[in-house]
Amino acid sequence: METRRTPLYDFHLANGARMVPFAGWEMPVQYADGIKAEHLATRESAGLFDVSHMAQLRIGGADADAALERLTPTDVATIAEGRVRYSMFLDENGGVLDDLMIARLDGELQLVVNAGRADHDIAHLRANLHDANLHGANLHGASLHGASLHGDVTMQVRDDRALLALQGPESPQVLRRLGVDLDDFFFMQVGHFSIGGIDCVVTRSGYTGEDGFEISMPADLAVELAERLCADESVSLAGLGARDTLRLEAGLPLWGHELDETINPVTAGLRFALSRRRREAGDFPGAAAIMKDWNDGPARQLVGLLPQGGRPVRDGAELALNGTIIGTVTSGGFAPSLDAPAALGFVDAALATPGTEINALVRGREVPVTVAALPLVPHRYIRG
Image (cartoon, rainbow, N blue to C red; front, side, top):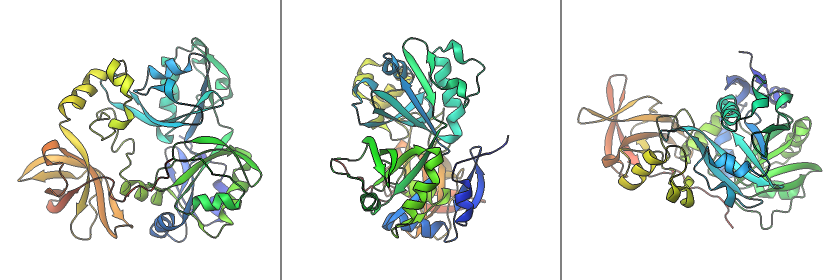
């Protein structure tokens, strides 16, 4: 399959990016300074990430809330104007088909879904919203734009938009220096802002554990906005490599690693994403299996892992205690903020207590690992 390019592809090359294929896109994995430098710059100042490979969707109409509630455990109707909610598409067994963000802006629902699951998610919405007019349509084609779904529901795939993530403790000051008023704008809010004269939709959110913003703008203005942001000496460009190490330290799940069809939200430590009304009604996909784990406790739990010694423990390594397999590493690497290896993984619930000593099996040898609480690096979101 031919890889796609974001509107910032030439910008990345001009700034010395090393490009790699990722989820069907050509994306920057790092720039000249390297992953560690980009990671630390984001923790200490501000990092700018191109996340235009993620799909931006808009769902409107009087039946939009009810339609989306059929696919998620979220009380969509209670998402207020200007607010954002983390959610998941679930299957009938309670497995996670993907995680996503749902915002309400201008009376409509704005969704952002993962690049690697975008085609799946669009098809999932199309099939479950019973849109007869979309069968056979190009998932990213113009035929989706403004198309009417079953009932009073419309869906648009916003291929006309790009998405940048400005993350780190200095990111609010960067935006303020470009004329953005952030008073009364806090974590998990969304709104319209002009940034350096460019009209944008901004959410105060991100995937690093730091304060930060995800900025949607017209695709043809993405380079101009990126250049304006990078002109601030506090901003460093950052690629997929730093994005992954940052989210690892923050204990944030990645679909295909900490989330998939075999993992439910309770096992993954995402109880907060199950809205109270939906739990009480038990009316979301996979509710019986999920609520059993909610009430009885899951067999396995997601934990942080701190390998001893200097070598990282990678994804897929088995975890053992006294010769018995008790879990699996789902994400592993070097954590620059800790200056040490770190990992995420699932272990038997009885062994999920922080401080528990277990082993990772790496190339036939046992590497001592200590179970740790998540996040490994504290979140620094700015809440109202």
